[in-house]
Length: 193
Image (cartoon, rainbow, N blue to C red; front, side):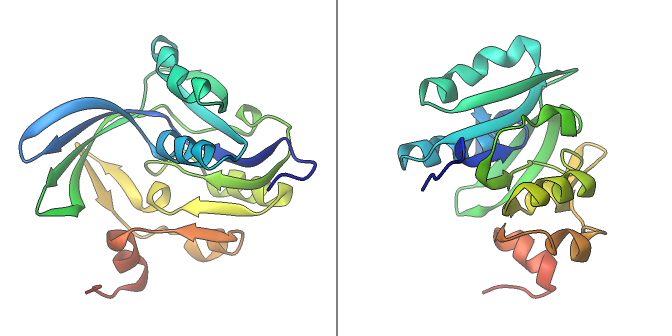
């Protein structure tokens, strides 16, 4: 896929330290769209960069993606982001989410000046990437956006889905959009069958 770009895809979002609970049994696991997405993209043979934030004590968690050949640009944060995801195995599509930490907003200075064919904004919850950064990345090249990081909002001890107030303006800068069932229902106002 690469031409003269350093990366086929540069992913921007928080690496997470998650707790996954299925039918009452839980375990701590690495997570976040930048973790899962970068590993899949590398296995498909693409050149991948990841821009992320996490607590310095958790930088060792990035070794797995680095060993897979992903180039990581990590900035230290006061804490590492994480989510407790509670699933009922009868419906693995829907989950209850509790925030465990938040590494703060990604800043323009966190993004290296290296070219990529696609800039994939892959946050796990609202507040990681703002509209201004989205627009800046769109000036560099095509943007892929995982909508969860704009509609999944921290509210008390819960992550709840809320409309993205700047959605019309934000989506005007997006070439590729990723949504799951819950997000699609929120965006369209229709229940999917």
